[in-house]
Image (cartoon, rainbow, N blue to C red; front, top):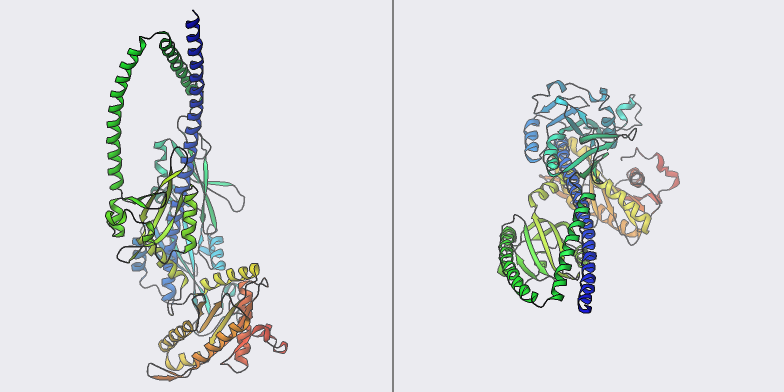
Amino acid sequence: MKGINRQMVTATAATTLIFCLGLIAINATHSSWKNRIDQHIRQLASDQALLLENQINRSLAGAKILAVHIHTQGGKDQDFIEVADTIRQNLEGITTLQLEPQGVTSKIHPQRGFEQLLGNNIFQNERHKTEALLAQKSRQLVLSDPFEVADNELAIVGRQPIFLHAPSHYLHPHNSHLNNSSDTAWKLEGEHFWGFASVLIHIKPLLQQTILPTLSKQDYAFRLWRASPNTGEERLIAGQAVLLGTQPSQHSINLPNDTWFLEVAYLGTTLGKGWIITLVSLNICITLLAGHWLYNLFRRQQILEQQVNQRTLDLNSNNLQLQREKLELKKFKNAVNDSGNCIVITDATGVIEYVNHRFTEVTGYSAKEAVGGSPSVLKSPFTRKEEHSELWRTISHGRKWRGERRNVRKDGSYYWSLMSISPIKDASGTITHFVSVSEDITENKELQLQVERLAYHDPLTGLSNRRYFMNQLEHQCRLCERSNELAAVLFMDLDHFKMINDTLGHEFGDELLKLVARKILSCLRDSDIPSRLGGDEFTILLPMLDTETSAKAVADKLVAIINEPFTLSGHNIQQSISIGISIIRGQGLSAKEVLRQADQALYIAKQTGRNQFRVFEEIPTTANPEQASPVKI
């Protein structure tokens, strides 16, 4: 009797322990399920928001490219249809491209279905007037509020303002013969407002390039909205007005002069009270069965034979399971090897253990050459040491790294890769391997770089343009203010350049400007930023100077090299240049104020003889530099 009681107590204790472990497993399962759902909708919302943002900005680049084309053609639009066709073929998502000289729609491509827009003046349209004025004033691309078009579809318009250089004289807000203030409000010296290059983008085709419209088939829902800039009221763009289900994950979509928001929620069945009751009931049944089995184990020796037989059956079942797992592993290996992305697996020290077929196609290295080596063989000179160290620091701490890299193939050619590197840990949490999945994005990246070059470089000289220079100058002013770094701006103007244009022609003048640009580059460091503002005006940003004397030395060298006689197109030329210098010490000045000082110093240099330079702070007070000249910014 005592033996039976001991067996009963032991079986009861073991049964209680099994029941508690089952409850712990149920709780862990519920938490794990919820965490996986939350993580998935966060990743889903983040990926789709980034994809939608990139698609919209890529489509808006069409307006910038068209604006650059009109600018380089001096405002002519004879080949508008050919250029528009090329842009639409290379940039997806564009419904139409439009030209709006002085705000009046004159060209549309494709025109079919939009003929009623021809002749419309957007400055007289209450829906688009505000964005048009903002674009004209800011000189940057401005995105309109979503609005309804035919068949109740929503669309947006991106407008890129176009400013052209005045052909014969400069226009200033101070010129007394300009009476209409609206004509001078946004004209810079040497420039006038031509109009807009615009793209019309339907939102529905943009969404169809993502997986958002198919989310409802996967028990998900989304909501795309924006806040009204006037009232702050939420305005639905696409998706459901109200999201039910789990707590939605929200991610922002940053666009020119606006921000949209994407929310994604899971609508599927939750692990609620009914499921928990079912799992607890199942746990009770399993516990009772285990208790009964333990009791019989302790009570009867004969059960040992049954146990041996049962284990034999289990071994057979496990063998079948092992065969199935091997088959699944083979399928997985084939899927990885045939993947369209490059996949690399390394050990914890970074030694390559596996590469798939796509890796050998992209890099040129065979699997035999890659295995046993290091991924650093792909690292190009464009990858900075700090970036490489940050990558290893991230994955070594067990975090996922994602980013773009410019790598080098075996034959020495370069390619762009979008990479994602994840650490693999064992049961103890120790990192054992790293898995890299990368995609060859060279074609898209080169197109992006080409668009950026069109937007930030002067087409005649190849130097940076006014927009890029002002951005870099503003950044340098803030840097000097924070770190007390010393920098300088040189504002240069060719002496008597108008006379050269008038006597020898504009083509000769253009060749002279190209030659001057090359001479300027020969005097500068790699870190210096030269720019052509327009006409014969050049600027140079000199960062990280040791002393003010360094800026004077560069100016002195420029005056000397430009003054050297040379022959151009059969003409003997003796050219000179005047330079104004503004020193940046962290005075808290804006980019416009720094350029204004350099312009005033340039005026003094011209008034006192030309072929020389002057520093703003060294201008005598009797010279009254504040009245020197209209500021060319």
